Image (tube, rainbow, N blue to C red; front, side, top):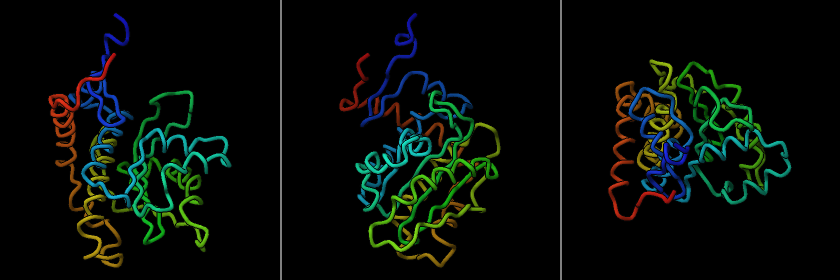
Length: 238
């Protein structure tokens, strides 16, 4: 049996194509791959359609981290319209081998918030991804400010990040934390402000619990199946 027959495409959602193997990952206690995280980020974009918010696909974040031509990054990043984004969320993977598709062993999330001029790193495994997150920060920080910017954004490791209770749910924590931050941005930030609990930290700590994260697997699986059943999201052609 060929690879295309054994792992057929099951869904085309926006610019994301999912395969049968992605359902298998969600059905079992497995490490999430790039496609599932990209799918959920694309879904969050439809839930929070503000031009202020950018949820970067994993492939974009990976290339920013590992691009050998740092001078050429400016042209690569231009379509992302970073200068006009107030909230940017990057998934971080510890894979640093550009020849390995879907490599790496851990996911975390790096968040830029323009009003505080800060990057915040959330890692669900005691800072395992600190060095990878800092590499992404160093690569992209200089592109976040306009010509009138007087300083580059600062970098913060969130010591209050919810922690995973097993070795395979890091990608689910990325999806859950990202959802919580998007909700905070649209619903709570004007009421809470930057001085009360610093940004979204208290909202994430309250919402992102081990039980909620455990439910994320079946929630994402349910979303995929519901979109598969809709006419406007027909299975992609082989």
